[in-house]
Image (tube, rainbow, N blue to C red; front, side):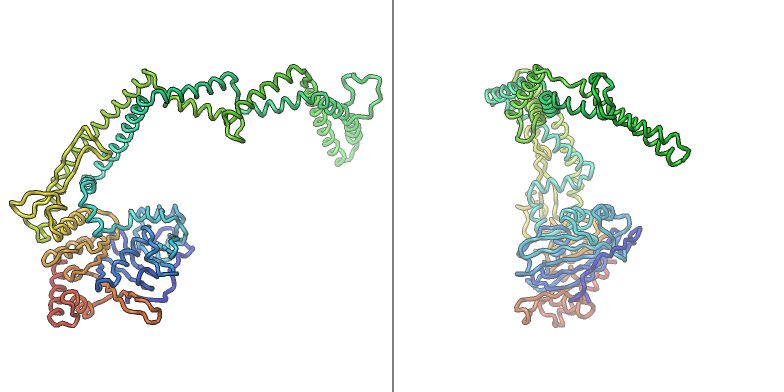
Length: 603
């Protein structure tokens, strides 16, 4: 059964195989299991998804779209708390079987994710009724953005929203760029960067020319501050050094007494300054006496101790020398102290004026560096404006060259793109329709993505004028054109899982069967999930899921269940889709005929 409840949540085990094993049958991988809890009308269902084409059908309002919503949520889509049952928590979990060479493994490992025991990768997403959202990947809690990034290599959703978006000229231009290939897309990105550089230079030049007085005044303020700082020329850390010098100069006499007392205690009056006085035995003499006494012993232990004392004598003598140097360097010169205090006061004034509280002299030097950089942006001298204008003109020439190359790339791709879309339309009961692109270029008004206005044109039948597709097509024709574009793109899309959400709206008859045939063809290389209301599409399914909605008297709410149908149950569902009557003999006969045609069409 495709639907189970009260099933334990899948967990990622702690043990990770050295190399993930390939668990799926699809070329690029597949989503083998999907569990949805508390989302919309769905209480708790688990879907076992097979490779190939999976269709999801059901009565209008039964909740078919919740399957797509769950997939989108699982792969990092925006969390809508309005979909969560009041006071509850919605959750979606999925198990992905990916080949070892899939780029997803490396990116998942960077996030700390681990494969499950069977080599699959488990994703999970929860959303509370208050809007709080959490994501898990391979047993690790991760930012939702990580999952959304992985989704670029895992999932592509094609829906009616995408079709509406493709009616906009800007989206048609991007579709043409995408069709032109990776090299062309890289050129468009280079054009976007060049456009940003040109606009920045042009705006800067306009700003300087229009604000000469204001910028000149601002520059004068900065120059005054820089001159004031340069006049003092403070060195990094000088404020701390001046504090140390001031304390030492101010306390020179007291410090000399302390150091001399310590020195005399260590080595005695070796300078003769205290001649005639009686001093206690100094530390060096006492240690030397003890060392000589022990060194004359025959006992090995005492001899070793004598060596330790000899080392101590050396250390004491070294400290005494350093103390003597310290005393010699002490300067009680009042003039020098006044000089230090004056410079410290001057630096303190700069700190108060140019540094943030607590930054000290480092803040002053930082302000000076920032001011120097800002001055280059405020320069309105003739030389500076001429140099900036030269930079702007050079950037404009580079942009013009890129615009020309982008236009050439679009014109080169337009015929091929239109031909492929036209070929798909021929199979969608629009064999006489002609699709083309109109590319209008205005080199004097380049935009971030080039200097072109692109429009997709449709001529539904011979003799009909080519008009923009959103104006020249009926609802059904527009759906077929947009589906044809989606199919053209989808065939080259490397993602393993593709979802089509009612892209067959407004289509019927022979065209509906052709849609099913094309989706089945895509399912040879991808796992394809389709939400559809057309029996002609559902007949091509490898796996057929039906969404049922029924009142839940125990909970007092409407609940949705999803079940897999096969054999006669599937015939009954197709008959319901065809005639609204699942038990109709005519409807069931038609359903069996559709299944036979689909089996033959799949080859």
